[in-house]
Image (cartoon, rainbow, N blue to C red):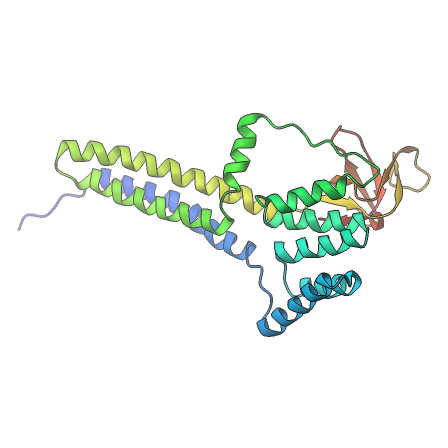
Length: 275
């Protein structure tokens, strides 16, 4: 009986498929867990509490609304809750907490224009003026494109396009007609590039959700010093609502921060709230 010969090209191709598949499915597991913002098991109680909070806000009882929204957020995060809480704090004229919650809402839903508008409005009422870093146009386009879909959707796009890559590659390897093989080789390359791009966007969004290295100044005013000590040289003063980047998070009582213009210094951790 004639035995079929082993084709090393086929083995190499499927080894390549497995090589790309492993990080892809690992990301899907990570991104799903990173995006799991639930309200807890008692959804009826949660909806009732949110309805009460919304009613309190509509009635102008902003202090009660703040309290109820804060309680809801202990059960699970969502952009809508942070946004509503930011609005309640804004009405209470607590701009530091309003900005903090708008920033947290924007971290979860970066494409939401209402959140961004209200954030800019709250910033306009603070003492310090924040000038955002100017991005190169293609970097800005990439961020706008990435924010069009949530992280879970990008994970599914990566999986679907990768499966299409496998199917196209299989047709290219096992197909008999030269024209068909050439066409599906092009398809395979296209789907592989799309899968890798979706994968990259997913990792980028996951980093935005998990790496929390920015904070808001919560005190009316705070002195930034040259060393992590109350006796350090005074460098400059920041006021409530100012956004900073945490450079050194190793110490408990002090944090090294950086501003948009590159100025750095040390600030007491109790004066900051991480976004």
